Image (cartoon, rainbow, N blue to C red; front, side, top):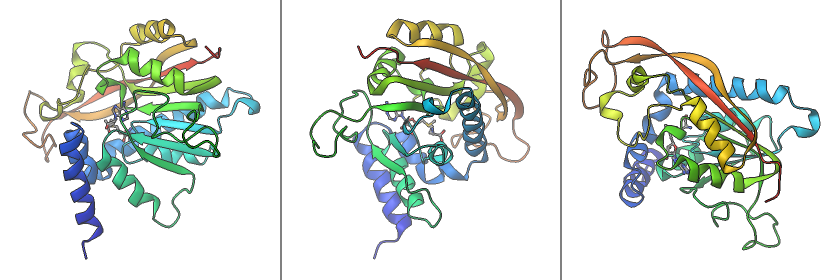
Amino acid sequence: MASAASNLRAAADASSKGNGNARFNGEALSWDSRPFVHEASQAAATAIFKRLETLPDSDQPKQVLEIGCGTGILSFHIASHAERVVAVDAAEGMITVLKQKLQKPGAPRNILPVAVLLEDPEDGALPPAHDDEPEGQRQKFDLITSHLVLHHIPDLRAVLKTMLGCLTTGGRVMLTDFEDFGPEAKRFHPTAKMAGVERHGIDAREMAEMMRGVGFAGVDVRAAWTMSKRVERYEGEFGDGGSAEAGMGEVMDFPFVLCYGERRTSK
Ligand SMILES: C[S@@+](CC[C@H](N)C(=O)[O-])C[C@H]1O[C@@H](n2cnc3c(N)ncnc32)[C@H](O)[C@@H]1O
């Protein structure tokens, strides 16, 4: 019988051929071994919870959508604050790892993993709004999160429109990513991991303008925390694998933004 690890590897290999998301399928099996991704998701959860604390009880989110959940690290944090988290990722390898994690004792029971490149709020891969109409309108959400994803999205305006279409009236987005604070922001990724990087972080002013243009209200995009990351001292220092070995690189601080917006109307 095939082992769980070989099944995961097969799923990662198969899906990397299918959806053009080779980098994240390839990295799925080792994703959780990187301390940085845990620290970054913990910091994102803290920033999101701090923002949620400013809302009245009646506005606390019950139904949450995480877009680009990876192996579900942030979803696990959010799950204890929600009725259900629908966790979607375009890379099937990431979703396969998340499904394995959800089988483990003590894992949250209210995370629904979905493998989909989400570009349409009415995508049939999302759960139906009503159980008795499985082919009907798709579920709408009180809160959408997305962490370290926006810098990979080719068309930010399009994904913001999709997000708006996935929200209930009164629903909110709280999106987190590193900030484009200038040319040095490029150093966030090692040279070997530039595939799929569409921009070197989020420009807070441009993002706020774009969110308003798409139709979000109450927009507020600002730096919420800073994180240290080991980066290359010169291009290619970390080699083809993109990982720092002992004595390599230097530590640099990166500001992270929280992009907040609300859907106020049903149109
Ligand atoms: C850098 S990873 C971050 C994963 C996770 N949020 C974390 O911080 O550990 C970016 C993820 O976004 C996913 N992604 C990018 N665009 C997406 C979309 N439109 N729909 C679903 N997933 C998407 C990729 O497949 C990838 O797994």
